[in-house]
Image 1 (cartoon, rainbow, N blue to C red):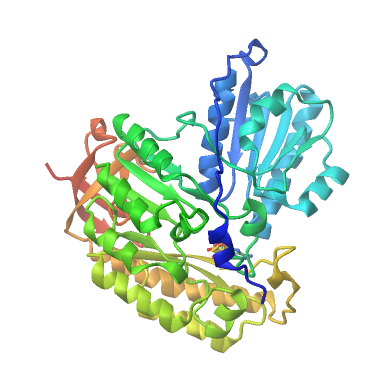
Image 2 (image 1 turned 90 degrees about the vertical axis):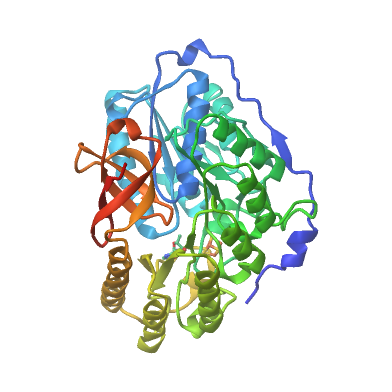
Length: 468
Ligand code: 5AD
Ligand code: SF4
């Protein structure tokens, strides 16, 4: 297997920051123009959409909640599994119809799918009604591309990841209480099933001083919680010899005094003791860790290029549970990797039984063109994979329910972030351990961290009331 040399990445010290001034003078051309944005995929994409929205609003655009009212439709896409791809092309079909009645409407496809050569080829042959295809490495140039848009299909995709850029506080943040903060871009792990290293490029860390500045600025604005984002946050700083490690960054973020700090995602391979000690030491680092397992079988883990064994994973899991008080741990699991046998799958079930996760995102393996695993032959029928997924979900749900029951009659701290969708008399929020709670309380408390007594525990959420 051809894995990248990590020392090589470390040696690559670079002056890689560009500061972008996005205080574009509002252009009359965009006054009264409306944009609609649809986001697929992970938190990274959600945050990229906050950046895109900020850039568009700086130009003069106003956001609308339906594509039918828009002059500009942005699709921020995900490439992680085939079904994400199908959904995007389904939605594009509707956009094509809209364009028949409203010729001036502009359609932009950006995000991970834009970095896939096969997708660009498909667009060139069948979807020429799209106005702009924009890659993941040059989002910040969107205002320029829009201003200089040529008639027909414009393709602005860079294969080189280029520099890390800073746009200051020009994001349109969806929440006034919780904020995403990118700490790094890209991934050098090259797990054999995963397309992310190809669509997001090499690992590039932002400067810690810029990250801390962003946290301070959010704190001053009244934000209660920040989530540090990266495909693999443990690798923070390893691409720049002058930067600090992730454990040190976490410590520095904790010292800003912001009330809640979270981070996603950490790879079990280089989850250091320093990281665990720092999480345990600071009350404002939340005791919630997402620790993707992917498979419990050593044979499959090796084929996936995951760099740990079942035994090493469980050892790490136990160490975290032992050192971080009341930690909640969730995971990602893929079933049906090429030629996964019943024995391999049983090893995954065994780990789930042992770890008793608070929750798990479970997926059927989806071959992604250009990844090493997509070239592996696979004799397992889809029906077997579906049946395994169902069995896995039953075990996962059993433990997520069991863990939630432990909250019954307890009082927990909840950050209230919005009105409950199911019951407008209630607010919803999250515990320190990232449990979703619906809370009977005064609406004025939105944005506050309050004590909530848990009255009912379900598999995927808790119900409670504000304890004054
Ligand atoms: N097929 C299925 N699931 C995948 N993931 C990543 N690539 C694939 C793929 N090709 C899952 C992994 C990862 C999560 C974000 O998506 O579990 O942790
Ligand atoms: Fe993909 Fe995560 Fe592996 Fe990186 S560490 S290649 S993002 S699964």
